[in-house]
Length: 133
Image (cartoon, rainbow, N blue to C red):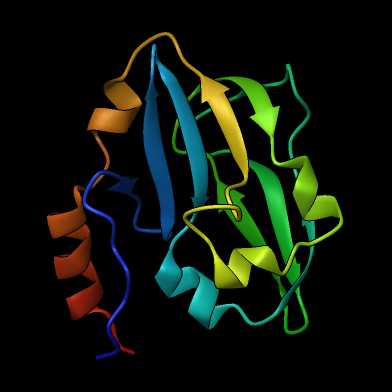
């Protein structure tokens, strides 16, 4: 199996999204290194609107690649408080820096319950090991 970057401070979903706790029930979302390596070259990102309400497991973000269109599932219910506007000009940064400049959007939630229900880095690494590469 390939070796993927799985930062310990993040939480992860089975759909290969990551979530960073920014404090104060604010959370940043993106796709994992595994996803970034497998989806192909990103050409466009449709982000949710700031101020919109999102529910856990709803789809309010889509990543377009040269190969396909990929839905991004929300992992945190709440209100979209920020989006990564730099992706309009440079969506390909998702492929090269998915945990840094390639983040997608931020959500302000009422609690950290959704975050705490996600996989830890250790659990996600085990999950990846079980996947067919």
